[in-house]
Length: 372
Image (tube, rainbow, N blue to C red; front, side, top):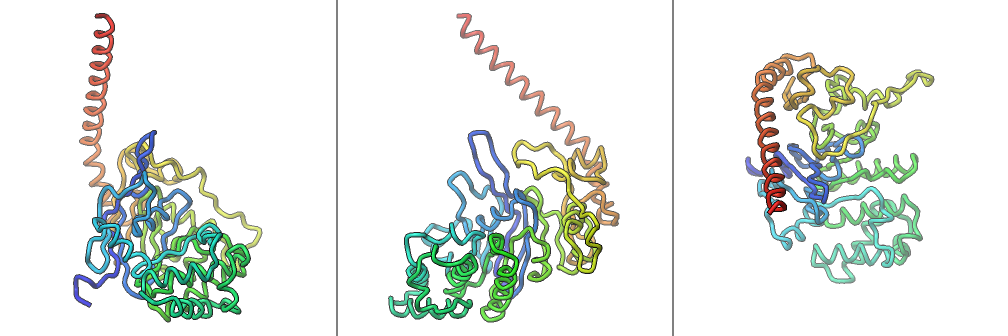
């Protein structure tokens, strides 16, 4: 693989917004990461953090109101954000596949699972009907579905939740994609089935060697599945590092809160778990401040509520976006931000003044026309 194509997937300064009647919802705000073959990156965060929108932006399967407004997504060094729908159709399935979190709504209820598997295989590989059926049976066997020859004639509602998820995994891997996106694939399953599905995915990754983007809110799953972790909050990555570092030395208050809300093996069962107060705000018309400011217990007034921190590297491979982090790189970021605040305040005041003048002018013109 050439130097410039060292990475299978490169997401660079990605911004994705949804344009509604009430304004622009900025779901993803300038995130960047890279994936190499055979590695697993976990994206963690609460509901509303922008995790799934990141996945849909990579696949470019956003709703009609959503679009990528800035940044790029590159596959093997080629920017795919400007590809035609025909190019993207070839890209999806054969190069990148996604496992959705609810297999019951992802599978079409009016077609058999065999028909849906065979359709995906024929669409992306050019196999004929008999070859596609044989491949479908082979994949169902590989993901642990018993009696696959009879299962392909069944409809989704005739299968259990675990079986449906196995079918979804078989569908995602049937064309041996380079990149597999798993969007909370075990959320709708009970604990026992969750463990089986995770073991299955680890085993299949060894066999097929795809790069895996694993989206979840479950930090226990992250510890089991991921090589690296990116913690997302309000559309931004607030901390990223290898999995061991994230658990051993979390720096962002949000990361600490997520880890503190999970039971520790061997810990006191009667000990009360930590709870992060509040919820993730809607990403619309937000003030210029750290997104976590209103929920943070260590926020610095006059700084965190005035400007957003940049993601800085505090040690090799470990990045954090926090003014309260006690690290030289973070202290330098604090100084940079403090120097910028007066200019930002001046710009904010000038903008407010201009808007007030425009509003006053509009009212004057309106009343003037009525007087005439």
